[in-house]
Image (cartoon, rainbow, N blue to C red):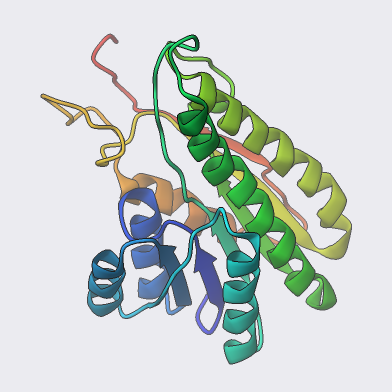
Length: 229
């Protein structure tokens, strides 16, 4: 899988960073986005990847980043839509600002990157778009009105895009992890039972090894033994 080019939104920590590290180890050229300059500098120095400060809520910034990446390397083989935020409150207590922050980042940002990447991939009739969603894409959680709406929406976006793009050789997959031990989850106490970023990264690597005729369009991954099991 060497000599290929990947773009990862939200790639400075957690699942995105885990995927970036796995791809770099496989010989990929990887570009990650983030909004914090210090985090970007750290991840690019430690992993040897490229990085740009991009707010995925800005359609023009997302498109320019992907255009520059493809222009530098002559191709774009993989987009990982990973950037996401979570703000949680009962639906009658959630502010409109929190709603917009979650939906604009998790759903609008995914659409901007997906549509831009698809335009770059179509002439070559090849490419993968992997959307990192969540089990919350199908199962509502208390206080998760905005997060659930964004992730339910991401699943719908991805599955419609899969139908639109597969005739051009572009494969679109949604990966739906359960509880992952990252700073996003903010879990206290024992986390040994939780998934790790590298578990999700392994799913992405496995996808990339599938033959061209095969398209796993939706993948759920859960901890084997959660505390309640």
